[in-house]
Length: 226
Image (cartoon, rainbow, N blue to C red):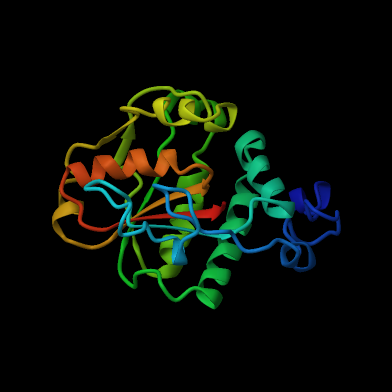
């Protein structure tokens, strides 16, 4: 145990018991995410985009593990506003364990691409939570990790602060393919866009458009919660 652990003991964000940020009893109270088609927002098996809804640049699947509630929600909010690296590590590890235990549909070989933050926001926050967690998830699932595949072209209002159509228009033109990353498209591996929370899916959809516009065949969305 290090000095920081003695001075600032790790305690569960749900119940306050010491030892972990997400203790097993609190984590077990969080339900599974309700998966839906990102085009029509109706229920969908495995988060697949319905065949009748699919367009040329639609995302193919959008998979999340937990419902956005309880100790999972508290952990994600801490990540966004409290610069908490250790919480990110623990949440990512718990995510990997749940995926390995419960999920059979994810591709065996893939490239994980975290949703980028705009540089000013990343500098202010100190880290990109999607990148920090994505690195751990990719390593444990045996996927390639490409944190610089996409760039964020402009500062946007946080999606949580917006409603309805504002969420989709807010992100128009927000992402671009980083120069020198065309090989990600041409090797034909599934591309997995990773973010912390899936709400309306506007962020994943806009990032997917960039990848498919550049020739990507299969694009997944993967999030901690929805």
